[in-house]
Amino acid sequence: MFGSAMRSFLDTNVLVYADAGDEPVKQIAAIALISRLRREGTGVISTQVLQEFANVALRKLRLPPALVRERLSFYAGFDVARNSPELIQSALDLHIAHGLAFYDALIVQAALDSGCQQLWSEDLQTGRLLGKLAIANPFASGPVGPM
Image (cartoon, rainbow, N blue to C red; front, side, top):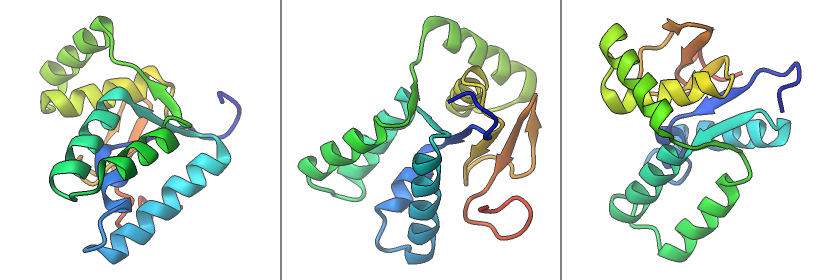
């Protein structure tokens, strides 16, 4: 997966919107992005993203556990970055150096450690560069929106 194609990390909110029927425009954009990255083999997520998705899917979206399990199986087809003590330490350094919320720093560090050039997130500062990682909002239009 480390070929010439740009590796992209998906934040939890993208996965959540793919199942959020009350946000049809964001749902369409999320599904399109997830499908494209899966098809290209360039998408990356983390165990943190999977955990957060499962929690939101069960509690807020009220998806049946069987459907959540199906989604988790699908998302396991992406490259999955696993949290480690080293990743957590590096995320703490990011938190200190850049003023990121700690859980956001975990996402950013997982993306950096996975060799991603882009992080798709509605929650982080669109257009911000952290090292070689560019933050993009998949629900915005324009130069940092969906490709």
